[in-house]
Length: 204
Image (cartoon, rainbow, N blue to C red; front, side, top):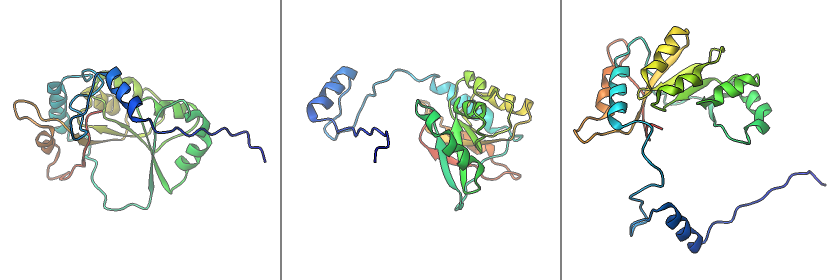
């Protein structure tokens, strides 16, 4: 039976191809295979900016903290942007409408799905740049989950547009002077909201 489906499996690269890739990108692993440099440039903002934003946003007691859950029967689905996304809209729509799933999107993917009549459960942003406000420019009310390192304008936009928003910490930054975002995030907790979710990983 012919299905019209064309599947290609990628073969792993060999040692020579790997060495060529390392040379092309100007990196090399140490003896243990650990990279001391990565093939990309500076981040979108400097560490001090991330720390300042974490400090400011942690004090926003008008935005509730996202807290941990030991268990949920719902399955988390993360939908990222990419060229194949348009081929899975029906499947994503079914999951968004089902009570078996929590569907998360990030950045412009949320607005794209909404434009196709697909409403995700949550829109998450961890990017620390101010331009991410543009990713929130849609009319639907999708719950927002914003990292403390996000630009304060995102929180203001959410507040001014009556969006439901939660804050959490994607812990990653310790500066040369010893300041770190984990300590700053403690300002988010208080008697009325004593816990905040923190995950390791980074600001992006």
